[in-house]
Image (cartoon, rainbow, N blue to C red; front, side, top):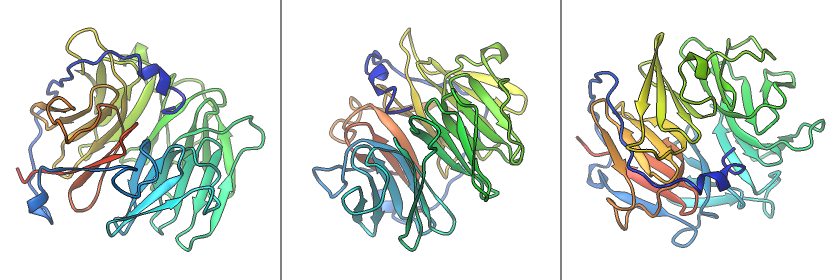
Length: 339
């Protein structure tokens, strides 16, 4: 969805984001491995490093804390011991350089979503792929490896694919599945253009009845991002929305994003080690919600450190560094402050 709808978000009008506290959150302190870097921003792009491209739609880490990123139009890259290593059509068996999503397994395998199907690189370096021959295109928006080891793949216009160990199964053709999450009970949550769907970890369904929609209190049916946080709250971001939603138990909260009439897109949501919630948005930079107030990170208040206000992806490594993928300026690394 990020690449298909990129042209739409360009028309958004910049605005000031802010969040209202929906519940008290107790802050938890933790020690950084590198306190001297706390609160500092570092940029990695195709001009100042060997990062192969500047459009970073997906970021994840593997079990050894190596960073993996998708560089749309330029394949994927691995960041290990300060060095970027690229995988593309010229040096690997990846299906396409137009990479959109990425996940890693506990054994070190890498799953790469592309505009032409799924590429799979094992920890030993062997390549495999899956593309549904029955559809005209298989543009992957998101990948989720469930706690059971099952693979869930959300696509643009082709619904989702499920792999439980004996081949891929296809469901909900004709629907955009933009985000996938798993809650603490093993339920799989699908964020679509038609609302939120919820399935048990083993129950697959072609049901056309979503779990939550506008009629249940959502501000929009177009869900672009999902997060189940450490407090078991489900966060939902939307396309062209003014709010995000937070489902806490049976209570659905609406949190205002915009001061005024402007709208934005929340492309990704992540929780850091301190329990703060980060939002990657279009046009409006990064927002961090600490449980009390919100904090805005944009080019105007961090000149020279934040190169643009269009963010697509977020990841935290085990050392307390936050990594943010942008649409046009590569990656920004931020080490959380000590307090």
